[in-house]
Structure formats: C-alpha cells, structure tokens
Image 1: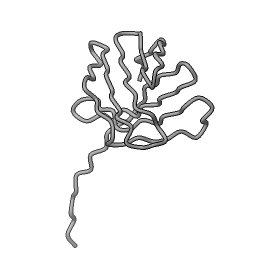
Image 2: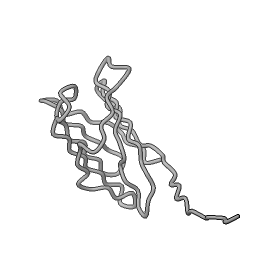
Image 3: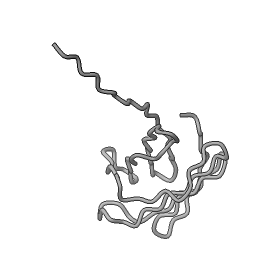
Image 4: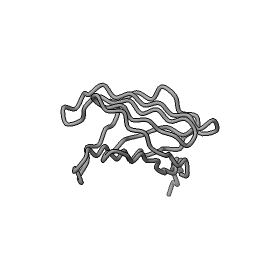
Length: 109
C-alpha cells in the first residue's frame, strides 16, 4: 500500500459590509497571503435576495492596515447599476446612479 500525501490549503473567509440608503453590500473576504474581496452580495432597496457579484468588479485599493477600500463595478449584470464604494477609515461612500450615500463602516472581520 502506498500512501499519497496531498497538501490541502484552506484559507479562512470573513466578511465586511456596507449598509446605507437601503443598500446593503456584503463582501466575502478571502485570506490568502493578503486579504482579497472574493465576492459581493449586492442588495438594492427592498431586495432581500441580493445579487452575487464575482470576478466582475474591480478592487483598486484594499489596505486593511490603513483601512482603505475602493471597489468599482461597471454594471456587467443588468440587475445591478454601476457603483463605486469608497471607504476611508470608518466612513464609507456608495455612489450609485445619481445617489451618493454616506455611512459608517466597521472593519471588524
């Protein structure tokens, strides 16, 4: 009998979220050599189900030490309008359509 050992790499996930103006963005954070935004479950006002966004948004800045995050979504899925989420420290701004929504942001993961 031959024993074959195969390394398994399991990385923990956590989440961050934005909530304001009836919008809720639940971001799944994957832990590799550094944290990455793996997906976003996007909820519009009144939408309890949400739309999962994967690989169709751009994270231009994600620094957990400096508490900076910038996500741009161009509107690939017609169910979700193009948006930009900018977080600096404990303040977040979601720009979607003509709306500019400010909210507090908690970096606890």
